[in-house]
Amino acid sequence: MSMADPHLGAAFRRRSGITADPSEDELARDWSLSPADLREIDHCRGADHKRRYALQLCMVRNHGRFLDDYRQAPLRIVNHLSRQLGLQPVLFLGPPGREPTEREQAQRIRRYLGLASFDQDAAARLREWLRQGAAEGRSTGELLAHAADKMRDWRIVLPAPATLERTVNSVIAETTAALFDVVAARLPVGLRQSIDLLLEVPRGDARSSLFRLKDYPRSPSARVIKGDIIRFRLIENLLAGGTGIEALDPRIVRQLGELGRRYDAGDLRRFAPGKRYTLVACHLVEARKILLDHIVEMNDLFLTGMARRARNAVEKQRKRLRRQARDGMRRVLGAVDALIDADGDQTITVFREEIDAPRLAQAALDCRAYERLEQRGELDAMLLRYSTLRQYLPSFFALPFQAAAGSEPLLQAIEVVRALDAGTRTMLSAEDPCGFVPADWRPHLAESGKLDRRIWEVGPGTRSVDFRPDFRT
Image (cartoon, rainbow, N blue to C red; front, side, top):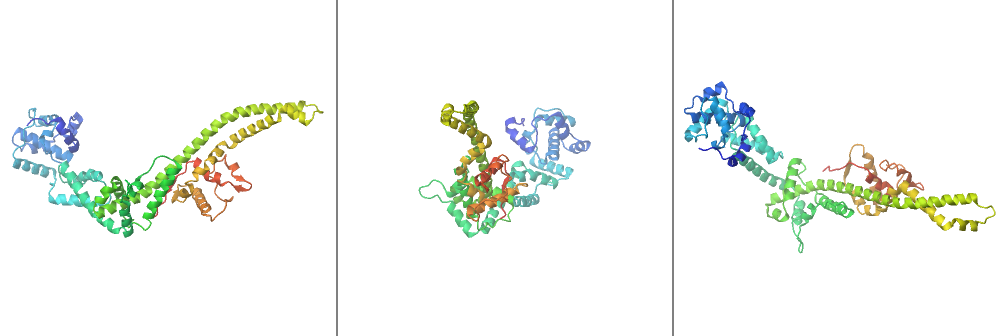
């Protein structure tokens, strides 16, 4: 039989562990025969039988499974084994012997290496291990990667890669199908009814309600954040009566939730009820967490953008006022000089005419405007945008949060603002947390003995705050 087609065998070699062009170190490590190996191989009759036996012996010892197609064996490996066996190099490996001979040699190799074959008992043992792994929420890739290691631990020869993949996929499909029925049976009747409504497409519309719950716009604006909060509250209301799956492994919920997100409403409606209810319920549970994280991220981006726009506006205003204030300062200083040099008999009316009092008054306003800009320009620019912020702030502060260590005063402040929005409190007090307000803003926080709520609410937006969702259900 001719050498293997390199294109035909490349994928197989990657899956079986054979390197297409092994280095000298790899040949010495994986394809060297010991004296005991040589004595064992010597029981074979014929050069090609010895080559095939040596190839399979090294293959099983190093890769855990038999090579099911000799055409995939790189010629470099075949001739490396031939040299150790005292045989002539070949241009191709001869075809396999009779099937009974191949089976006998495989049995001899298993016996020599102390391995068991992949029989029905081994397959049943593997399937049970896979069922346990699938029930623990392990992914297909994870189970497939660890199945080979587990069978090596059991001293069992690995089946062909396709057989192992087929077994893993089959067990996961069976386990998942059973899981769908178990989970769906735990869901409250009201939640299942709500799921059916979510999957309906209203007349005259092209999208289901579930599709809109999946839509997370990435543009950080007050309108988008407000819409995200509305979606979050809808999900909260859907799950308000509980899900019945709180005890389920979070990894399983996460996997099923991600799977449910991939399907559209039409696909989900075609699924069996158990699968449909389970996928949507798990998606809603995960969407509640993801959406809250998304809202926090969008709020952070929106406040960052608002602060940036405020700084840019202040900088533009600074360039204009700096010039006006410079001209105004010259006029004010000129008026001071004129006052010093004025004749004592000069009337106020004449003096006001000389210094051009109206223009002097404007100069003073320009100087004061520049002074205020330097003192609190960014603060004023932020407060100008406060009404936009309030479009969603009350709903945002009503979300369930927990703060990172060191940010506990922020949670206290959130409780205060919730009370203010609810009307159970009418004003801020000096005892309320204020440490999150920037230091250069604090002198302006209190006015006439009262705290400026606008500064107090906008203050946290100028600094990085680590909020996380708080789900205790």
